[in-house]
Amino acid sequence: MAYLTCNFFSKSLMRTVNINVVLPTDKENEIKEYKTLYLLHGIYGSQNDWVHGTRIEAWAQDHNLAVVMPSGENKFYVDHPKSNAYFSKFIGEELVSFTRRSFPLSTKREDTFIGGLSMVGYGAMVNGLKYHETFGSIIALSSAFILELIVRSNDNSSNPLHRRSYYESIFGNLDEIKGNDKDYIALVNRLELSQIPDIYMACGTEDSLLYRFNVKFHQYLEQKQIPHTFETGPGGHDWIFWDTYIKRALDWLELEEEKGISSGNVNL
Image (cartoon, rainbow, N blue to C red):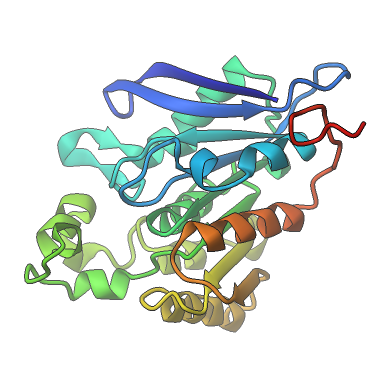
């Protein structure tokens, strides 16, 4: 398994960006084009979160999966035209293009996945639907499907990232968010059933804020008869839950399994 940190200039963000990449290249077989998961961090996080918080490196190695982990700051991975920071375009177009040019990754839709947690469970869903021709599967854990709260927000919160002014800096005019490309419901409704990526969702039953919103979106997908997997279980909004359910999500993807030599797998 190779773990690489690299940077490149992003035209979408108009600056140099850092990404981490896991490649299962240590196995004694010929170079292949790897299935790829673009794995996005949540609020307050960085491109290092998934490696520090979960066993994603080991599981990527065992499943011959490449994992690309960019940084999206606290920006929900949506486009911000006023600041010339197009995070959605960066994820859905530029990052995919750069990594495919740089590493032996499959260009097939069915081999290309996007996933995230919390703020970016939302971001993974929105960008997976928006760039449905690129991503064949979406993994959304403990997702912030909270547009109805955002629309009704005010500036009274003690947390600056829960204030209306913050949300306006992310989404623009909040009165116009419903129905645009930042609205997961609108994106679902725009697509034919055959265009919608495979969807895996999970949320902890003790996730006090987000559980009910994940259930509500699951129920909406059921009502629309859109195939998807939704799992719940004991757990809160934390890495214990996400470590468990990113593994369940990888199992859901039905990836191949081939263990390689590593410090965690020495009995070969």
